[in-house]
Length: 179
Image (cartoon, rainbow, N blue to C red; front, side, top):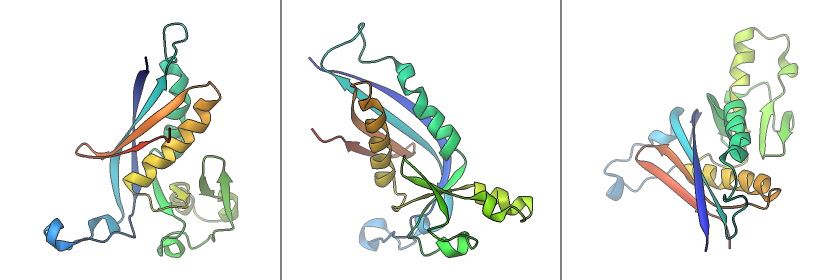
């Protein structure tokens, strides 16, 4: 037998899909709305799988509290931008790709100490950016979350079978872990 449990997490974020292209024969228009700076109420659903239960459970749902803390502390109410976005130098004029703080989970943040003499509103703007090395599409975000969750849960011997990411209540991507 195989058991699967899931837990959902919500967070607000902004992004820009600078690589968006549309075929007007299918999209009914050619408006590239996702190229604009915009925001979403995102939902992440993490699925955990096991063939054996420990204490009658795949694992305790509390073993995913670290993921909620990651979303709250790193991504909630932040703007996710691709390092390769042509707007990077416009949005972050005080920074280049080498002057960012890197984190094991695969994101970077502006080093606020670099702008310590700037007015508070400038510091607040930079505190709102989370940089990644991929276009922050629904598909790429779900793969990123799968990678982060898989690495962390592996320490407990728990398999993350898939991650769903809902960019809106009607738009969802799902990525499955390799077998």
